[in-house]
Image (cartoon, helix red, strand yellow):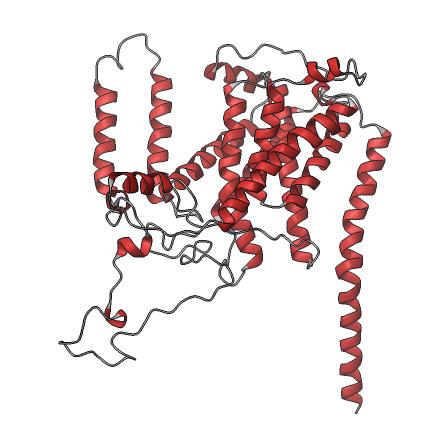
Length: 451
């Protein structure tokens, strides 16, 4: 997807350069005024391309100009009027009503309004940059909530969750999926539930985020091995072998990944010929133009190339680890806070992680593959890394005494061998050749000085 040209303050974002459909394409220079820098006579034909001035709406491809005009003061006045009306009417100030909940909602909405107007633009401009600024604001609120919970004990956190939902705060039994592992049609059919659809939808989203078959396959297999490694802590990680490798990997995960990658391929080859709303003629054409606002402006295929350099290798391993943490964290959080898997908080967390990961992975790809233009890591990827890391810290703190069973010896050996291979491969692939080049260059310099 193309980047927004400028942020709300008129400054270029380090990860949001001028709009270009290809990362490697050179930046087009603005044409000099006149003809080769020479002023054009006043009677010259103003329809010639060297004298034409591109309007803002055409350059930035806006469909409805009103939504792209700065209305910060209007939004401020409107927001203050809404706050004054809600805060000063009698029904809100009625005795006995819980005004803390209303005040918290008002504070959250006010913050999101500020983020919508004042935050820096990200890499996406469809359907509108303001949507992604609001998503960044929600991510920041969630990160602040995690930081607050990090300084609370587990019992206090469970009591706080009852303020959100009074049905919480009750211990829940952990379901075990490995009770009857005979590979029979009836057992397989009984194992198919709504979570199979959730698996497929989740991997459809991962395909849209990562845009790479091999990356998705590695992540899918790594997650199943992670479930094997952690089933001594969470009972719902214990599954039958055919549930792991047939239902999850070969059916649900593959279908979701396949559909996600087919969607990416469609957007990659789709011709993008954008026309303004006013340039579209007829009601059907205008309606189609408005609906197309919710599709990508253009599409960039990701080529992670984890074996080409140490930076690419480190990025792929880091992204794999972050995705595994993002997948495993909700299982531990819902277990520690006594929430059902289908609780709205759990579902919202998964949905927002998908929404936050879309621009975050795009910014990370830009940062790694085009460091000359992306001089610093983007705000979406930075905040998402902080969020996943803070979730992990909360889980580690609250898990003390909750999972007394020690790590099995085969799991320790497996993780030790896997970690050794992750370090050994870049050493052999990148470290040894770099050391040889360094020694060879020093020998050449020594011979040159001797001569």
